[in-house]
Image 1 (spheres, helix red, strand yellow):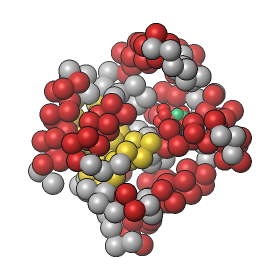
Image 2 (cartoon, protein in one colour):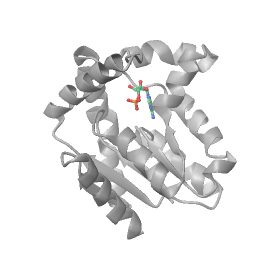
Image 3 (cartoon, rainbow, N blue to C red):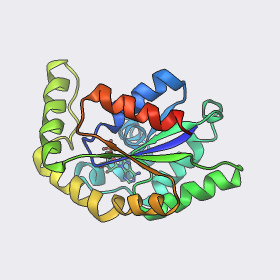
Length: 194
Ligand code: AMP
């Protein structure tokens, strides 16, 4: 099963991806997590990505496409994977299509978590507070100022993917404003119908 979770930052993609991992035993491929790991490890990619990420802008398509292309070749992806936060541009969407086609594979579904984005900044700030309370380090881009830029990047570059997957007959939309467990159940319905 190969699926994409789509939605603005704070929509719950990471949380729902984790639940799919637990239930279906396929890995979550979060380009945000991979990039943060590269930044922490101060790799070349991390050094190039850091400022862009801190500013809430998108890292270049070439960088993220290369990261994903390598990752989906790993043995744990053989049965499928969940793409969380990727693709985020039409160029990335075409790239992942081509990567999969070259392996004789295809995406099964793109699930959009539809949310009221005026509520998202509150979620992001809560996430930051909870992380801090638990003694974790808060993401540098989880604050109201950078959130506005992340949301703009979402509408400019990522929201067009909703039309892209709709046109391919791959889009399913789930109400991301519902209770977390309800969202999980709705996603399960989509997955079990595949
Ligand atoms: P996320 O954890 O998905 O919110 O991503 C955090 C940041 O990493 C984003 O604001 C971007 O700067 C960068 N990023 C993550 N995934 C991508 C992607 N697919 N394309 C470009 N930039 C990305």
